[in-house]
Image (cartoon, rainbow, N blue to C red):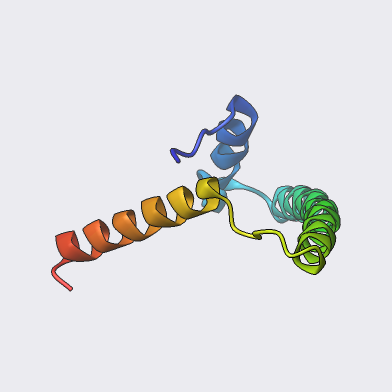
Amino acid sequence: MKERRSSARLEADKILLNLENKTEEELRDILEELYEEERQISYRRRMLHGKIDIVRQELVNRLGKKHKKGKNLISDKDVDKLTEILSKTLADDGAKGK
């Protein structure tokens, strides 16, 4: 997936230009802004991981119930996705000469 860079992110990257011309106070301010951005991203990442854990556990619970009833746990869609992943991996490895 191609990384999209927001205009805010591009503007933030400009902070790193000409650091040698900035005062120590400006550098401290920049550093604090970057720390705050990192805290916000870290919080969002933790929240996302929590949601992933909840959805994953729900899926595990459902698959466990299916297994107890003797139903198939792997669908045709799962097999197709696995085939696609393995085919891509083999093609990528072949292109790299492995």
